[in-house]
Image (cartoon, rainbow, N blue to C red; front, side, top):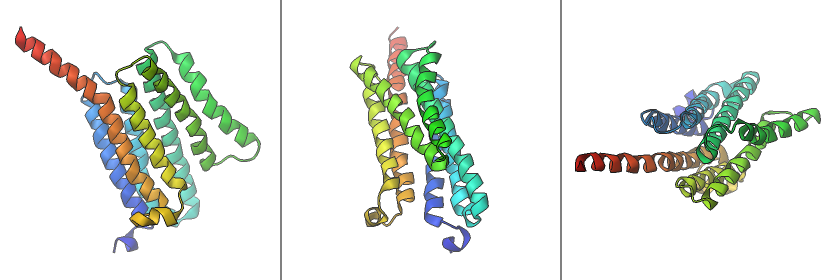
Length: 221
């Protein structure tokens, strides 16, 4: 019955689940003013992209011309989410006033895409592939933060690695993901949930401990 309503039911429903979970995490971050606004924006755009992915896979995919436009729109949302992820990383690791660092790292991915476009290889796939360059920059900054013993570094690195491992599911053969009765895209959607939950916990648990310690200190007085 679901297959009769949705064009790509498994991909649509797993994207919906991803979107609902990440939206809940974004709301959770919004309730924690101690967390930088860039992180809230990153989670927000990731949630919107996944929810739009539900509409894309469930309805719009039956019309190729429309699906091309909708997928391009979702790709832009992913670019925005990655941009805010980088901005949050720069603010957390380096502190305020490092806009130049943000643009240096961000430009690497944008220039890579421009090079592909000039050589006739522009496309949605190229956009997403070039975002991996930005993600490497994010990992590099958190690696440097870990070296300097930043309290968030190790938890965030684990979350980033989990998300990158989830992205790797998209390039796996259906023969491999078939073991869990899922296509690569659907497997990616579900695996990405774990990465986003880990990132949420990495960003909020230290603040929860600080709030608890501050409350105990106030009670002690």
